[in-house]
Length: 78
Image (cartoon, rainbow, N blue to C red; front, side, top):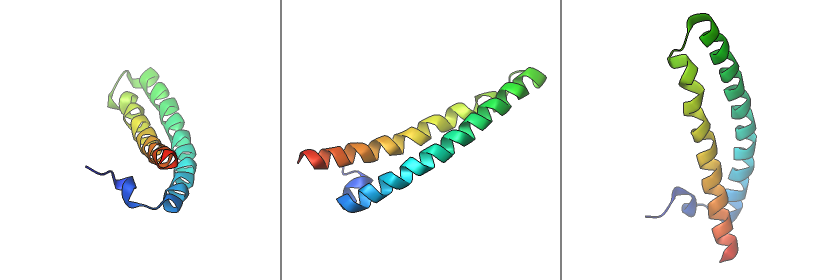
C-alpha cells in the first residue's frame, strides 16, 4: 500500500519537511513544558494520568517527521 507521502511531488515534500521541522521545535517546547508541569503535579498530588500525558505526544512528533525524511531519501536514491 502506498504511503500518503508518495502522492506528493518532491518539491511539496521538501516544503512539508521544512514545515514539520518548525512544528517539531514548537511541539518539543510544549512537551517540555508539559513534562515540567507533570513533575510539579506529581510532587503536589502524587502520580496521576497527567504525569504520563507528555509520553503520548513524543511519538506523534517524531513519526511524521521520520516518514517524510524516509520518503525523500527513497526518492533521492531512485
